[in-house]
View 1 (tube, rainbow, N blue to C red):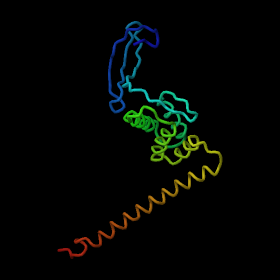
View 2: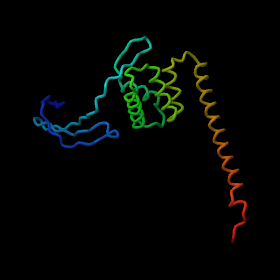
View 3: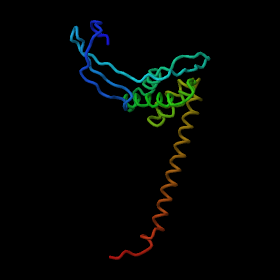
View 4: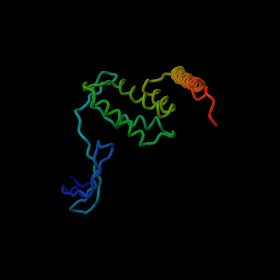
Length: 181
């Protein structure tokens, strides 16, 4: 490993640690020439994934682009950088598990949107506005109403569950029989 300070090619490993759920290894090294210490990361190299862009061009998958887009969408929100890093890793792992080695930017964007929606509605709308190329206020309104409709459906579902639990409590044997005190 080449030293970033003096470019000497010999170094020794002082410490190795697994990071990122075992997907990478962090190594603390010391240059044998200048004695500076530096950190390196090793990641498993997967078969490259080809990303097909909107204009039809193809390029290699770059995880940092996903991360950069999510960071911008999550500015001034409560979403932690470590959460975004984990989401990017999850998405990359999902893509690596697929037998197909090419994917469209639209499919990647949908994966990101799905995960961002779970973390922050604000980040979801921000990311969607860039990814889906919003042209005006109507696009924002449509996305927000879609979010609101889904939230209302979730609330109705939760309310139904709560009502079911209450009705079960009223008909359960412990409620129908007097207690033996």
